Length: 248
Image 1 (cartoon, helix red, strand yellow):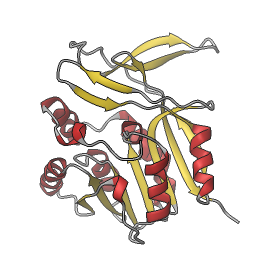
Image 2 (cartoon, helix red, strand yellow):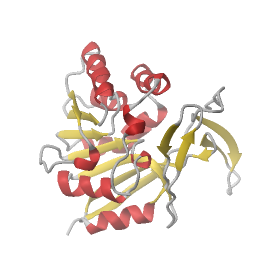
Image 3 (cartoon, helix red, strand yellow):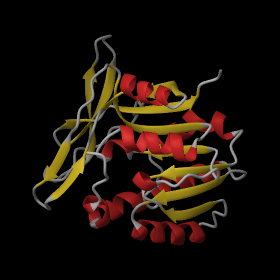
Image 4 (cartoon, helix red, strand yellow):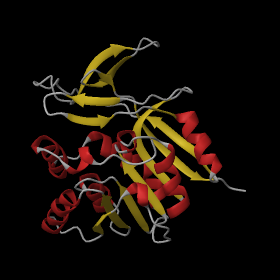
């Protein structure tokens, strides 16, 4: 499967809309952690594109923290972008713009020196094509992302069907080793990765028929208590990953 399936993105409901817009007022802990993860790279960046930005809540948080850098919030769904434009104007954020882009049909450009993507890659049908499109069409100095990863050499294709609303979506978990192998083919490498550790408790959703992340406290193999993130029937192994050009 090498083509993006778009039905679940275009036909969004009130639940999804609330998820995207709420973050404008209340930045997620994961967004703040991601900014801390990449801010050293933003010191030398001029123009950054956020692929799969939705309504641009995470992009706007980073843009406000880095007023000297230009940001483009890109998404496939124009309705999300229109909401983002209105909120950016209302909040007077001048270094962010919005653009409708299909990640699977990226055109070659030298406009951007850096790429970010938060919580998007695992919701695409597969890993190779979107990664290859970024590294060959944009050719960024660096590409940072958050997604679901496994530190072993195993990848899982997970398709979720919410029967209540007949909504299908991917929750794929990719091997970090496979990510690095693909990046190597195009002159890049995984230079840094960190497992995202959440420091707040998220309550279990009241409706068990819809996907929604919550936390459960467990004791790991080192005897240390940690919060495990779960959505519906799935574990959510979040990582922050930085890919950079291989220096010769």
